[in-house]
Amino acid sequence: MAGNGESYTIGVDIGGTKIAVGVVSADGELVDSKRKSTPVRDPDAVLEVIVELVSAFDGHDVEAVGIGVAGLVDATRSRVIFAPNLGWVEEPLRMQVERAVGLPTVIENDANAAAWGEFRFGAGRRRGENDLVMVTVGTGIGGGIILGGVLQRGANGVGAEFGHLRLVPDGRLCGCGRHGCWEQYASGNALVRTARGLASERRLEAGIMLGYGDGTPEGVQGPHITEAAQRGDQVAIEAFEVAGAWLARGMVEVATLLDPAAFVIGGGVVEAGDLLLAPAKREYAAQLVARAQRPMTAIIPAELGNLAGIVGAADLARDHGPSPTGAGTTSEAEAVERDAAVAAASGSAAKVARAVESSTATAKAQSATRSEGVARNTPDS
Ligand SMILES: [Zn+2]
Image (cartoon, rainbow, N blue to C red):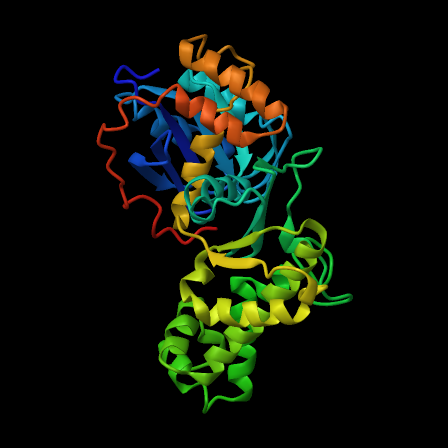
């Protein structure tokens, strides 16, 4: 436990272009942060950057490390099963980081970590819901599921791969090898594809949007669509309406199965706000099964931006379980956390949070400066 009574953990967000690392307090405040470029397809170099950045926070009294990875992570939160963009296959990342930095470490899928961050400290905290689904609309579509206040990982740790729900039989070919996946219709990439298609048919109407690029439909990029739509370009607005409607159709399928109280929509595309969310809400209300007999699900924007992954991973590290390397041996704080882990096994992560927080309730007056710098502008996710 920290000398001043405050409890800190480190969150790591490994994106395709940036590795962002932050020190986070028990109430979700980012108090210090650093980032570096992600080494391309060099697993050893990625590990070196993680260790370098985590070690740079030696001045803070840190209890544990949580790492969010864009890839499949096993159910024990120890091993990266497959992270194609990082070149990892069956990588024992937890053990490697623990050995290198001497702190208990957990690994989590990055979308799960972001969902947990929004649930605990972002859009979910504001609403106080225990059942929410986060849908991250980036280059693809990712997500996380929290039911009864517990992050749902599935039996093998690889659930909640929303982007590959099949919405269109024999539809567009997806990178996963199947056809008709949700992310082929409602992701940032799908938005660009739709906007280019519409612009090639209606060049005159798309003048504002085309003007942001090289004047051709192929030159249209994601930010052009948002800026053009905000300036009234009808083709850009229509592209958002198409993407929003597809976003809603996928959410309807998820709601049919899980009945969440809220969908939290994150990812870069959400910066377009109601350009995307208004048509999504309209289509969702029109398509939801038994709409007249059930409350409307809240569809709300995420609040933490790219910090959700760091804050979520750091918070998940508070329940780090037994350490395979013995890193971070017993302390009062860990005894509390072990009790909290037992509480988690009995079904309530909210109990975990309360147990951990009660051990660190003092010294909340310590000023924790929220640093806005890190990762806020990174385009990954
Ligand atoms: Zn797919």
